[in-house]
Each structure stands twice: as structure tokens, then as C-alpha cells.
Length: 157
Image (cartoon, rainbow, N blue to C red; front, side, top):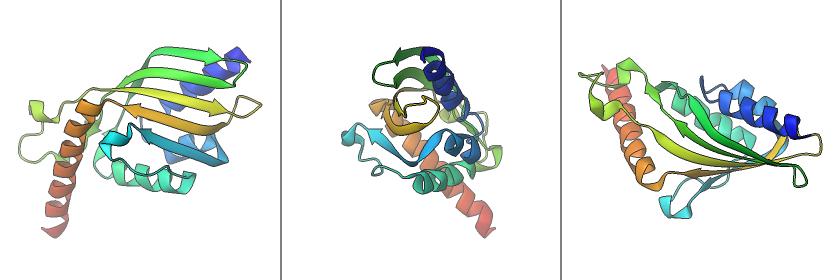
């Protein structure tokens, strides 16, 4: 069971690389909820699979890849749970970065903790709690807002 928990956690982290909706949803139960924390960031309400798929679709418009690397993975067999401490670095699409796509202002590394509650098989995730780096997420939100603004300008032109 421990290896199944670890494998599912590793596949979960890998699904972020290309923001693959298919890869993410394949790991989830049909009623899985994705919860963002902490509440102080005023992030979206818990997301169903459909809502999370829409979220990924919006991200793919501005972010090409979002590789996430696990620093630690801890499994709790009796609770069918995996906890992942990770870092992630979004790679924004060059067209949404404006006139200076290599500027330091487009570099970001965030820190995350994911708590995955899995079903009895330990192959499907039924609940995800994603803790975001509060200070860093504020920067990332500004970056995504600028990228969306730049994308709007491209679509109008």
C-alpha cells in the first residue's frame, strides 16, 4: 500500500508539468474536491473536477509548463494519505510576457504542500488540500494578471 500511495503522489506531481487535465482527472475520484489554502489568500472555493479542469484550461492560455518537484513525500498508510512538500516554477508562454520575455520579473519559484486523501485502493484521490506559499502566491497572482492583460492585448490586436 505504501508504494501505491507514493506512486499516486508522484503521478499527481508529474501531472503539473504540462498542466494536463487528462492526467490530473485520471488520478481523481468522480467526486474529488481540490481545496486551496490558506483562506487568507482569498483563493477560489473548493473545486470539483470540472471546476479544476476549467482552472487548468485558463492557466494553459498563459503558462506553457509548470513543473513541480517534490522535496519530500510522506505516506500515512492507515489513513490512505500522502503529504507532499514541493516547489514549482511556472514557465509563462513567451507571447504573454510582453516586450522583455527574459526579464527577472517572470521568474518565480513557489513552495507548496499537498495533502492527498486517497480511496481504499490508494490509486484515486478523493480530496486534495493545496497549501500555497502566501507571500509568493501574491507575486504569482500579479504575474498571472499581467500575463492575462498581455494576452488580451494580443487578442485585440
